[in-house]
Length: 270
Picture 1 (cartoon, rainbow, N blue to C red):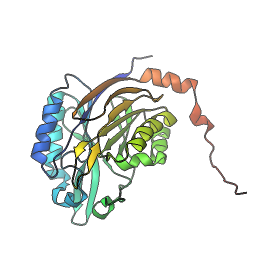
Picture 2 (cartoon, one colour):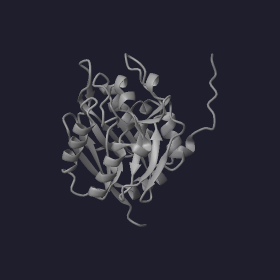
Picture 3 (cartoon, rainbow, N blue to C red):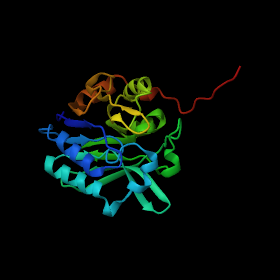
Picture 4 (tube, rainbow, N blue to C red):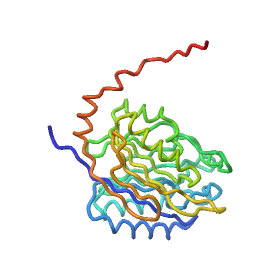
């Protein structure tokens, strides 16, 4: 069997609200810590920080996006694919998406996932400003299938099961997850990996947002058994790990849990 490994790096950062140039500079500085890698992953809305009220004024059209241009240059400089967290994409005056771009080593945009579940609770109102994405996206990077998700998507195991059934090898979750919800983040990042026998790369922002709110941090890389391969709890920094897919495929062959899923679960009330 051909040896199948890939090295992946994730950047945890504290974004300054509405200040793209400062956030670009911060990513550049953190990326300097990465010597060699195949893929770099960023958090959700890292370019403007999490503030729904500021989404529209900071939105970018795809063909004019300075964020895409920055990510393209980063990919070429590091000779790595970039899964670019997310940015607010403007389609027209009435349509905006929270979109995750994927850039190849030559700086070309090869995929764009639009967030499928929008968080609009406890004072957040994401759904007021951006639209629900149309469909999940798997992107193939050097023979490995990556299923893309953004933050609140992680509360919906259905999207991850759909990815797994379509051949996903790695789940990506780019987040701006609040520090008030550490237990769901801890449990769900592991659960999505374990229940689907798939690697999980969960990359979160860290530090202050607005109105005395803070992001949790706790970015992590988890294997198909729930083992944490790398993580950073708080602060800014980079985590890195090499994912061994032959080991994962052997485990899946030995423990074929997806074959035990029933076509339908009809509930009987008694």
